[in-house]
Amino acid sequence: MAMKCEFCGKAPAYGNVVSHANNTRRRRWNPNLKRMRAVVAGVKRHVRVCTACIRAGRVKRAA
Image 1 (cartoon, rainbow, N blue to C red):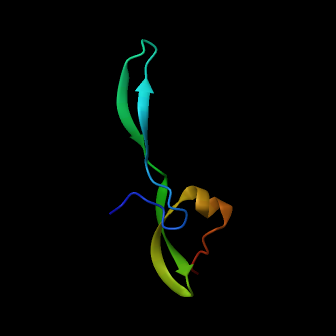
Image 2 (image 1 turned 90 degrees about the horizontal axis):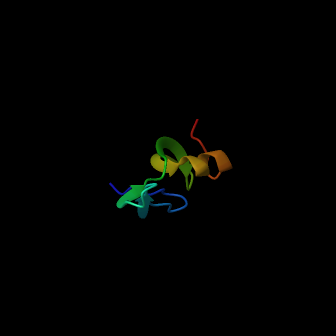
């Protein structure tokens, strides 16, 4: 399953962790995804959504 928000498309970001001694290693920052029931196109279904979309109100929670 892809680590991707179904509303905004936010996906993992890649980059380097740089220590004080300038040692670098690759890492990835994953989006904070939550699985919730939402109303999508008039139908209730489970979606994986980032918390930024939930807080912004882009997702309509299913009752």
